[in-house]
Structures are given as structure tokens and as C-alpha cells.
Amino acid sequence: MELLSHVIATYHEVALKGGNRGFFERALVRNVRTALDGLPVAEISVPSRIVIRFAAPVAWVEVHARLATVFGLVGILPAVRVGGTYQQIEDHVATHLDELRGGTFAIRCHRSDKKFPLRSEEIARRLGQFVKDHSGMAVDLSAPEVTIHVLVQSDGIFVYRKRFTGAGGLPVGTSGRVLALLSGGIDSPAAAYMALKRGTRAIFLHFHSAPYTSDASVRKVEEIVRILNRHQGTSQLVIVPFGDCQREIVSRCPEALRVVLYRRMMLRVAARVARRMRCHALITGESLNQVASQTLENLAAIDRVAHLPVLRPLVGMDKLEIMQYAERAGTFEISILPDQDCCTLFVPRHPSTAAKMRDVEEAEVNLDIERMVADACAAREKERIGPDWASSETPIALQL
Image (tube, rainbow, N blue to C red):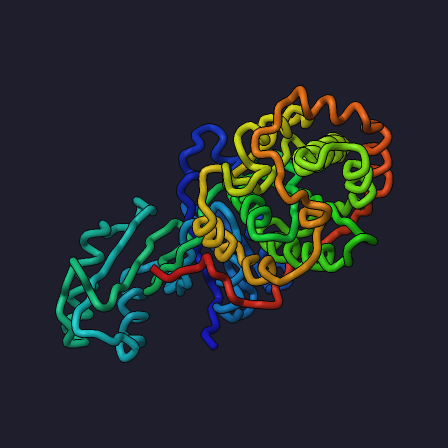
């Protein structure tokens, strides 16, 4: 198992934030520190990239798995700090020449410390000649089999050979707080993942229909939240019983409108919970025209009761695209496990695909909406759930 004492992480979109760059960088460093909690981190600095120094050698596979979940990072580099002079670069490379496997090589150098006496091109030329003379490999700047990267920074010179992709996006916590509705299926966790990637911090809300169904959906959502929390640390899961609301709608309202009425009631409850928890928007997993409740007419009817922005990151995606995002989030395998949730309870055989507001509002006259919302909110339960680091598998972490 490879051990290392330094890792360098790079970012892109954060660097484009102008006068607000410092705010985003501080949030990014804070999230890196959170992701590495429990590991012997000695120092995290930002001379021109994020440099992480460990007090003792740590396993690369563990560090990689954690940093690959930090939104805002675009590159993760397992690097070695070789010192501060050109001769130390050569000395380091000389001790590792027998590890180079290939017939061709290239040297890539980036010098951010402009006080260093050698320019990037001169470092690359001299080091390239040294490697050529001592290894027998030929230089190929277009498609080398081996690439040696050199970073000359104000805090030292670093050498690395491999670069791994980060999660991209913006640092969690820089775009406000949202309430993400999770059903336990494939779509809603993927939507939450995409909202986190754009810098939001999420609180999660799950509706269940116990005792009319089992509590399997609750256990399933807890596992999904643990995986999503790899991106943001500990968060809250709000669990709301919804079976009684559904039974009342079934007994008092037209069958074809049930699904739209369920969704409207959910958004009323979610909006009230969101305001109490100081969230700025709701996140849902609908994709336009994927099922009957997700036609444009039905979505318009559902949204009218929210009184908060309803963000749908998946709205323009097809099912295959959504599944790919679920796999990147690491939630797909859990989402496809069978369970009973409120979305499958009392579903009409022929749901309306174009509910008219007049019909919806007439149906809701038969419901004591304020009481139903208040009862559902009063019965909610909260859990604090931390991230799950049990697996080092990180689908979004790919070697370039």
C-alpha cells in the first residue's frame, strides 16, 4: 500500500471568483479538512494550490477516496516534496529511475514561484536531458508513456507522476442551504448530489407511509444520506409520516388526482420544514415527462403551493443519464434495492397527466389542509447522520 506525506489539490472554478475568491478558498480548505477528519493532517496551506502535509505517512488509497468527494477540487496529486533547489529534483528523480516503465517520457514543469532562478522551460530541458542520459528512454512531448511533473512553489518543489480527477463544482456551503427531498429511489439522491456539487449544503427530508408500509424506506434513506454526507460532513435527516395524509386524500378526493394531491401536500410540508430550518430552496428529483406526475402541467400545479423555489437538477435528463449520476454519487446500488415507500402506496391505475388547477383546488376543498400539514410537521423526527467512509471505492475519482 502506497504511503505519502504530501498531497496537492487543484481547483479551477473557485479561482475565477474575483473579489470573492478568498471566501470560496476558505470554504474549500474547510471542506478538505472535514473530509480528512481522523487522518494525521499537520497543515493545509494555499500558496497557489492546496498543499496538504501529513504528520505521518498515510495510505494514498484512503486520502484519495476522501478528497475525491470534495466538491471544488478538480485535481488530486500524490506528490513528493523534494526540497527547494534544482539539484534536489535531480537527486529525487535519480533514486526513482528504476520505477519508470516505458520507452518514452516527458517532463512537465510549472513554476509559480517567480523568484526561483530557473524558468520552467529550463528546468524541463535540464531534467529531461538528465533522465534521457540515465534511463535510455526517448523524449516524446506529444504522447509519452511516462510523464514527470514538477511544481515549483513558494513553499517548496514537488514532483508527481499521476494526476487524479476531483469532483469539480463549487465548495459545499458557498451557495446556501437547501432541503432535499429523498424518496429512496434512484432520482432524488442524484438530484441531491448535483445540488451539493453546486455548493449548497443540504438537509434531507423523507416521507414514509408506515404503518401502512414497512420502515425499510427509512433505513434505506439513512444509508443514502451517509453516502451523500461524504460531500458535506454530518447533516440532518428529517423523517415525516405521510400515510395518514394519503389515506385522507384517497377517501375524499378523485382517484385520478391522487398523485398530484400527494405531491402538493408534500411540498406544503416540505416548505414549512424548510422555513423552520432556514433553507432557501427545495430540491426534488423530477425529470420532465418521466412519469405521470412529472408532466409540465402537473409540475406547475404542484409548485403553486411551495412558496419557495423548487429546484429540479434532473429536469432535462433521461433515465440513463440519471442512473449515471447516481453511480457517480455512489447511491445507485442502494437505490435499486426493493422497498415500500409512500410513492407506491395508493397509486391510481390511471393518474391524470394534465391536472387542471380548477379541478385540483375543488378536490382540496374536501381536505383540512392546515390541520394535515400541521399534524405531519408535528410528527416529524430528526436524525443527525455522519458520512460513511467504510468503503474506499469512489466512482467519481478517475485517473487522468
